Picture 1: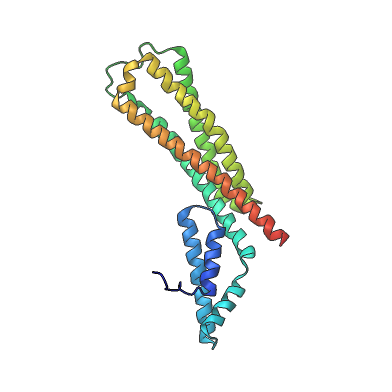
Picture 2: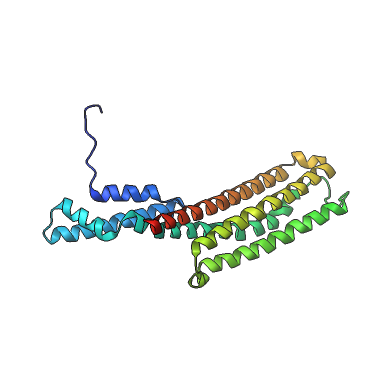
Length: 237
C-alpha cells in the first residue's frame, strides 16, 4: 500500500538476504543452508539478549561472530557445487541403464519384427549406444563414490565438480546424437514406428532424460565456476 513504509530489516535479515543472493546451487540444499544460517544467527543473538544486550546490538554481534559474507559464502558455495556434481553423476548412473533396459518396450507388440530388414549398421549403432551407456553409468557411479566415500581424498571438490560437468557435457552430446541416429534409422527401416505409441513415448522419455542430464551438467559447471570466482574474491579481499 502507498504511504506505508517497508518493514525494518535487522542485521540478521540483511545478512541472510546477502548470503542468499551470493549463493548458486540446487534449490532445496541452498534453502536448507540459508535456513540453518538464519537459525544459527538467531540462536546466537538470543544468547546475547539473555546476557543483557538489546536486540539490535545482539543481532549485530551475532553477525560479526558468524563471519563476513566474503568469508562464509565461498564455503557454502563449494558445498552447493559438490552437491550439484553428486546429483549429476547420480542421475547419469541411474538414467542411462534404465533407458537401455526399458528400450525393448518401445517395440512391444509392434506389428513388425525388429529383426526384419534391420541393417548391419543399425545393430552396430544399437550396440555402441548400449555399451557406452553402461560404461558411462559405471564411471558415473565411481564419481558418486568419489563425492561420498572418496571425498576425504579430494584436494578440491569444486575442481572435481567442474570436471564432472565438463565430462558429462562432452559425453552427453555425442551420445545423444548416437541415440538420434538409432531412432532415425529405425524410422527409415520401419516407417510405422513413427506413429507407434510405445516408440513415441519412449523417445519422449529419452529426450526428457537426456535434456535433464544436460541441464544438470551445465549447472554443475556453472556452480563450480561461481564457487571458484567466490574463492578468488575472498582471497583478494
